[in-house]
Image (cartoon, rainbow, N blue to C red; front, side, top):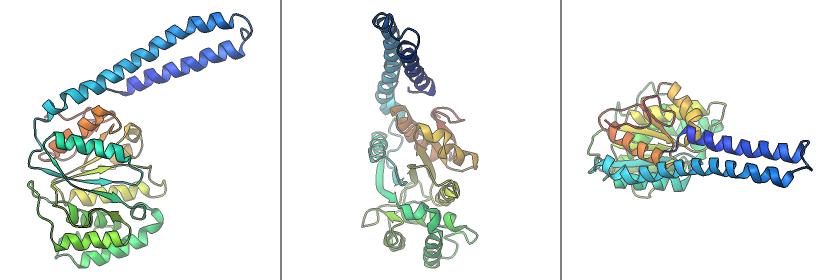
Length: 296
């Protein structure tokens, strides 16, 4: 498994290389014994890098090898709606989707969140459209006290998610919401509404704006958690101390996982989806306070 320790080992090796270069290239020995010094330092440096890479490769191979056994088909007959935030790596999103299928699950549909939905300068658009779409829902479908982005999260959830473990067929109401969001470039997805899934996976992308971006993300996630059986928010290793870490600090009810840019992190993401069918929430991954992955 690639852990922060492995990354630290790699960084130490890099800094060691830089240090050796400075000492031999810019210090008093710059012209004396250059070849001999370089030759002596290179094997030790190469050994450190090789060991770190072997550890990382072993962790990746191990995660890929045991994934199917650990999943044990626990997503069979369950579907997942995948939402990608702006800047999310399409390759990573597809790799996570592959793991969902390896666990026996189905990706009901994949949707791309538009920049206009999370742009801090587009709140008026989001608020106006959200208010319009809310009036088209049955009474109580959307929380009356919901803020702009909480409400939008609930509306998206009504279109793509379900509070029933078996999910629910899409209907005209879901189609109307999706068409409205697509028309305003807030959400892109299939032209025909897909089956509404009990589980929602939100894959993070670019760091949000420091001026309100975290509030937007927290609001969307809060709305989604009210309209699905379980929600998992996943990001890469850097997100663990970035936007995902800040979302955790906000007290989110969604499960969170950092490390989607690694095979172990993707396995942890799928296990968090499995867990969310019965126990929502939890912080997992490289910096998760509940451990690297849920095994219960």
